[in-house]
Image 1 (cartoon, helix red, strand yellow):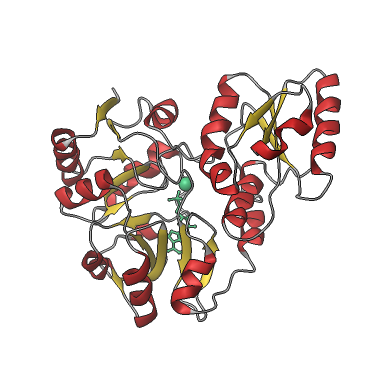
Image 2: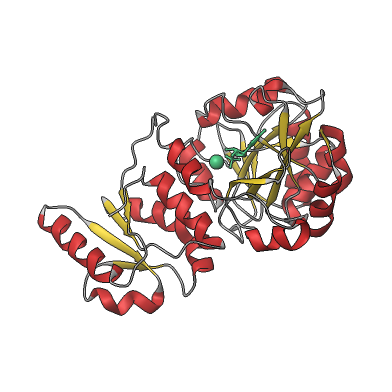
Length: 332
Ligand code: AMP
Ligand code: MG
């Protein structure tokens, strides 16, 4: 299959909307990462997403909508969820709700619940609106690769497997949505992400969160088909983290490896002349750049990325859960 990259404009969005209506799959930008979308009400179309990504059928998809009222088409919305929808959508928050029967089982991996969100990105909103149907879309990467934050990342993974990529530039958040299960009381964060816990708790009060890291640990037990070109290790966050990372770097280099350190700018001068990639000034920058810099490191033929840890809490929790998952728990 030939894979086209189309710059996002009114014409290309119209073409892609038509493709979605006809049961095809389309990669498109959102404010979090690129998604690989299909008509969420068409099980055969959704099946194509699982095939292209090599995604296990047990991993459900998130349904994307273009306006808040469209959520009622696919899910039952309770009062507490309504408050969150009013306050935080559109935005990088996904709610897990009880599903309506129009949603095919393949989309929810057979669950009685469905995950829904309204992306805050003009191209995504225009596309879903023009398609006239809710759009199920996981991240547009090969399963277990870093999520794509640029059209070229989608191309690198899925060239020949999908017909089209809508190019809307870099994704502003660069990290997936926060997933909140609203079918339990209190609601529970099942994936930390771009919306911080305190933003949610400001609207609905305390939510369960203690399992976010243990959930990513449980994912480690799943078999992974993909073997990364650059191994990832990361450090826990503590006072002498930079010297521990430096010693690890030196040891690995002496074994003939080609390591690189991912660090925040304020720490950069602590690594002497070791190779570093600066992940911005703040943890928010680091989270936004993680996937992009991992892919760049592979292209530069580094065979080991040693990433700095960050404190738990806020966006740091989301970042740590990604480091945990992508490194398969390789903590130094
Ligand atoms: P992705 O779009 O690739 O970032 O993955 C979607 C993620 O959303 C899944 O890995 C789950 O964490 C979450 N999710 C989707 N549907 C459900 C559901 N019905 N129940 C719980 N979590 C879900
Ligand atoms: Mg994903």
